[in-house]
Length: 43
Image (cartoon, rainbow, N blue to C red; front, side, top):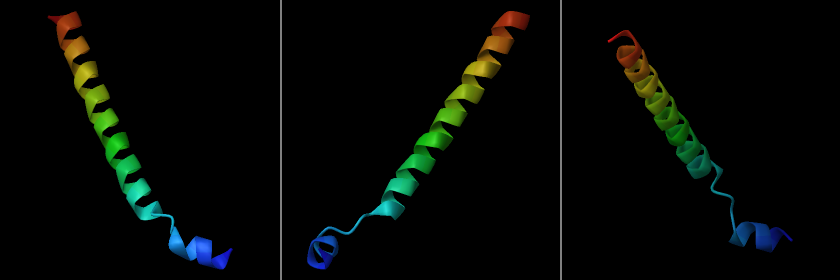
């Protein structure tokens, strides 16, 4: 069991980095679309 765990270590830091980048990208897209909708609604 220990040897298998050692052979395939879980790259959790990479997964966390990808998730955080995806979350930041989604937030940026949401903010951009929200401001665009507000501009279109008021314009």
